Image: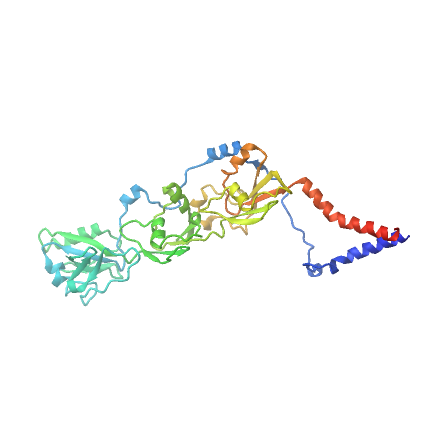
Length: 429
């Protein structure tokens, strides 16, 4: 009878022990937990990380595609700068200094306004000009010194320029060679066989914005040389150490495209060197989204940043100080990767070629986990884990060993058994 009484007392004390025990505790009386979480009832296939997996990956590998227009040899040869508003043109008419020389360069015939005086040049971007305006010399000063005769005019807001004996002509959207041909035809009515040279000396109309993790975020001018995304990053002083070059964004016409600059720098992949256009916004993000998580039976569960988008399974386990030899099961090392459900959001092109705005929103689409398993007890698995490349936000999970689970159960049960035992000894010594 006494034992039953003591047992009942211990039971009542154990029920109330939660309110008396020290440590963090959240009062659940004010929480409505009637709605239970729902999970998919389907089973997910686990793909083993073995020799066959890498053979399938190689067979399924497709060449990369340029998300926009990329800089190739053909694109470089075909590229031509088109004049825009506020650009500066330097025009030279050989053997006729009265048109473009000292007296005509900045006198009554020149300029882009009614007063005839050429306005000061607009501030240039990082591209710079090959020459700077020098009114005192009556022309432009070359970057290597010396003076070149020539009339410097600026394209007006209506896309026109004024030239002596020709009048006002529209040059917006034209190439320098086309402007030269137009002026030659117009001047041929006044001058026999005129010899002209037209070039753009101030690039002010086409600008891209460089933002993010670069040393000098700034606006950059597009010049007569094609401006690629790598050139833009270099002009901005290069990327910072924590920059994520694998996911550089280019926003154009309201759509954001992803460019893998890391692949371009490491493998020379030309399909990632996008040619930039006027109004593009280039943003270099940091590596906060390019992380992997190592959980489970490891010595130090942690999240690890990826280095230029690269991190192997071996690197991830090493970064967590390895598997816990007392509790981890080396036969069950899982990699869980989230992928969009193809039935909800089919993607037929590589991720880099799809505008981000066209991708499904993670809040509106279900995720399908892709699960991979590595058996570290096999000798070839030690080699394969160094070649298995993780992706951003992958979760590496080391399963607990069955013996460790049993020991943890005993650890929870032992204090209760000891309490009952010592209570009995007190009652019946």
